[in-house]
Length: 96
Image 1 (tube, helix red, strand yellow):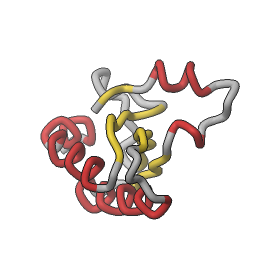
Image 2: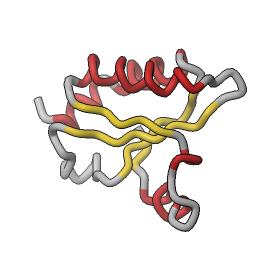
Image 3: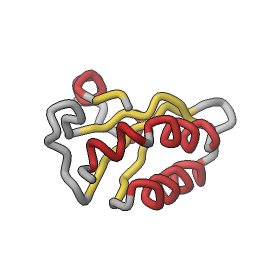
């Protein structure tokens, strides 16, 4: 199964993993989910933190999504993006 299809079929599970680990609004960076141009081995996902978020939660999200999707995941928050490009990158991100 293509990664784009896997993401679409496991959308609710992805959102549940993110929310369970004190984050919201998972988005894919640098890929086009709808155009099927996803890198099949690596995915960059940005999530927004909640008030309960702890630094180790990002690692839990990354690990659990790797297990679910069977690809390498780099998960991070918007604050980890370069200040000068943050808004542009987030505007181009694809919502899961």
